Image 1: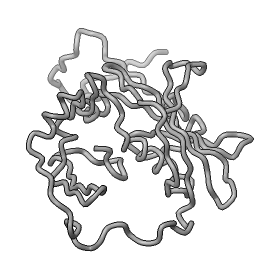
Image 2: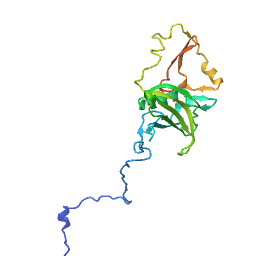
Image 3: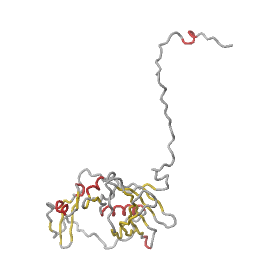
Image 4: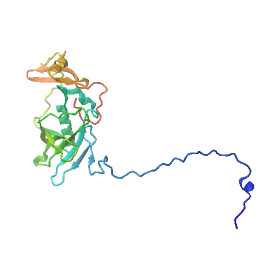
Length: 247
């Protein structure tokens, strides 16, 4: 039959009452992290690129080339707002050099042999634009072709615009020209200093609207047809993720 325990003996006497909540106990579901998600470049078969303008790279099947991708926008790269022409924000020319050099570094061709700019890259006021750097297969002497493109849409069939083309050479290739173009002395001997008072105001009148990040000229000198400049970024400018900041 059923047991009839002596509760006073088992519990050892009276105990204070415990207040219990009148609402249902909070429930929480715990999920294991997925091994591959849309934002995980490794899970998508790509290699992460630790660069401020490029996010990932992937080898192109059947051709030996490599494709690097990234997104550029004022919201993620606010310093770009300081580089506008007639009210339109553009990726500076040095930005193309930075993209190409970093892509070349990833494939062991960090020297830019040639780079020609074909079209400006407009940075939208809202959102961002997709950027691709396409490095070709290895050619004679280790040389590789390179191109910089931007996409107008989010789909795989969006239109692409070519902004720059050129060629890269291996880091171990002999340099042409032999030696530095600058002497150890600075400013260069015989060069005359140029007055910079009002230079950015004059540029703005012509439509070149440079904000604080792109107003880094500390000094300019001229020697015949050669111009020498001393440039520095404003204090506090974030340079993480760049080999050489485009400003």
